[in-house]
Amino acid sequence: MKVRLLKTTMLAGLLLSGTVVSAATSSEAMQEYETALSLTPNLENGKRVYKICAVCHAPEGWGMENGAYPQIAGQLNTVIIKQLADIRARNRDNPTMRPFTTASLMGGTQELADVAAYIAKLPMTPYNGKGPGTDLELGARLYEENCTECHGKNGEGDREEHIPAIYGQHYHYLVRQFEWIKTGRRRNADSKMVKQIRRFRHRDVLAVMDYTSRLQPPAEKLAKDGWTNPDFPNFARKPAVGTGYQIDQRANRPPRPPIP
Ligand code: HEC
Ligand code: HEC
Image (cartoon, rainbow, N blue to C red; front, top):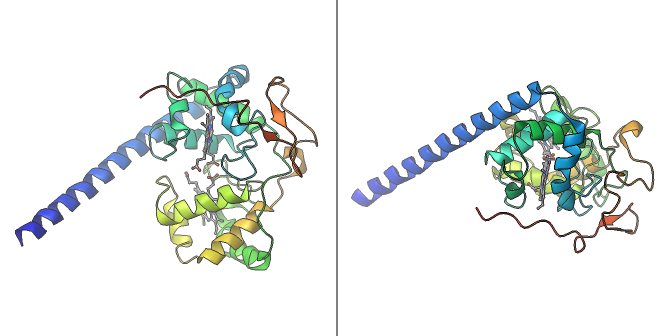
């Protein structure tokens, strides 16, 4: 009896502290988001800051076709700012990237606004990773019924509401995020979206993400074949089958994160 009571109290304490922490981090992130949006972005400085990001997301912002790194080029600036602020405030876990987003490495809120403006302007790859293409009818139906209201008919997202553009994104990244949103692992998930997708089976998830990965961004947002980012002329890139290129992870080792 006593043991059970103790356990219950400990559990309640844990839950409570969890809630307190997440509320604090999310309001800290929201504050940085608001401030960043009120600043005038400096693209030249954004380019300078982006050097840190290029090692993983590639100079073009295209990430990797296998979804290890997402495409961030062409994403809505409000979404980039919100995600960066969340990652900095530990409101979205990203242990790989977080060390590079600290004030000492990336800079302050002005740098956040600058780098977001720079990334939002980068043209997107026409060769994002796609799914197997075997269940697209189901995917289309699920998308129409569950996603258009927020992410738009073509996956273009919503700037005002910082809802991500999801067209042109790598399939494997989409699947990973969707699963993490569904299971609560992605803490900054939209609660209405979580509710909307709670009945999705594994097959539904794969089908709707396959369909989404095939939604084409408008032509003016796409890079021309063979385009590389002229701001990074000396970055090692190697040609890859079917795609523009893959970044050479060996030649461009990410800088060592500072010891926390
Ligand atoms: C060490 C590698 C690494 C570096 C350096 C890095 N990132 Fe990331 N980034 C990642 C990974 C991995 C993810 C996806 C994490 C996940 O799956 O949740 C990510 C996700 C993101 C996202 C979220 C994309 C989305 O669609 O939600 C944004 C925005 C982003 N990075 C911007 C940046 C910026 C800006 C910089 C430079 C200041 C940067 N990243 C540096 C690895 C990195
Ligand atoms: C009620 C609105 C809403 C609905 C419905 C909704 N989403 Fe979302 N979704 C969001 C918001 C808001 C975010 C970003 C949350 C955050 O991190 O701030 C998001 C994030 C995502 C992400 C992560 C994107 C990234 O770049 O990391 C994916 C993938 C996604 N949604 C796919 C879907 C799909 C597919 C559907 C339909 C099955 C769907 N969503 C339905 C609002 C919605």
